[in-house]
Amino acid sequence: MTHNHRLDHDIVFGLIEPGSRVLDLGCGDGALLFRLAREKGALVRGIECDEQAVQTCVRKGLSVLHGNIEGGLDEYPDCSFDYVIMNQTMQEVRKVDCVIQQARRIGRKVVVGFPNFAHFKSRLIMFFKGKAPVTDSLPYLWYDTPNVRFLSVEDFREFCLGKGIPVLEAHYLGQAGEIRRLPNLRALNAVFVLAGNAGAPDRMEDDEKNLS
Picture 1: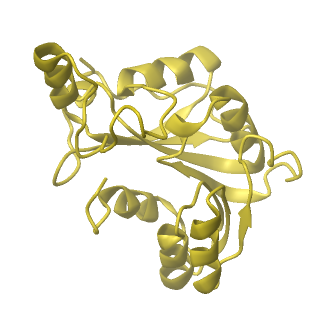
Picture 2: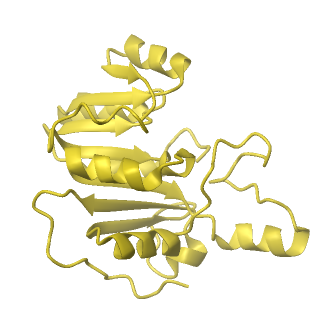
């Protein structure tokens, strides 16, 4: 999202319990981690591949490693964090399955946020203009986008179902707030909470019946 006020950050912030141990994979400039540390007393860590962004995090007093999340998670013990955050990161990852497995291993819960490529504006641009869509949640042109995955709300739910990953919560974000109906068509972004490998429920929750 391109606005200074990040609705996705508000949603993720609301999911984290005070005093939690948090690892943010692809933490960017550390805005979310800084807020969690300051307002919720969270013990925060981050991993970021952009060196300039890491320097920004360090100036904020954050503990952030410069590295690639696809190869740097093996060193963390099982359940070493209460939450692992992958917000606006998954669509830039090549080894999605591996990274999510590792995140679930080291985190008791995993928060995954991503842009919904099936939003109706993207569909209209593709249908009427025959061009790669550029929208609020997909602000990049095709030749300079960091995205290597193009997924929808429905794609991710099917992925979780196929892999047996329990979904604890799902939040669907529109232009001005959360939406309740037809998220695959109307959501600009989605935020899912996945159970970690430890203490996961026996059955996957499936409370969303209005996918389009």
